[in-house]
Length: 142
Image (cartoon, rainbow, N blue to C red):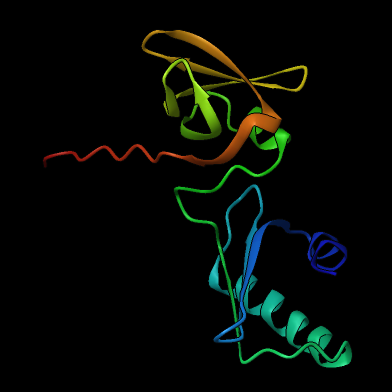
């Protein structure tokens, strides 16, 4: 239902989660120029109406941007964020590690390319459990 509602509003549905115990629904949206408070309010209002019409029981709804450490959920995300730092957690150990960190180098076939200090690695998209961007913050002294 979210996949049919959020993209036509001009936003990418990055992720969503439901916490059954507290009946909290969290929705993460994005767009190329970034998301502001008005965008979140607009999507929140639309989803509130939708949930009422569809009889979806919830207590709280939170709509926000995915943040600087945005999760990478779709194969297209790895292409879009090529050149950015990322951390990839695999389902199973590969060469003695499940967690890999490096620079995204895009996609080849169904594989994600990650440049690490030991060289460029290729991981099947299906082998990835979780992945996030690793924000680079440059602190400048004035």
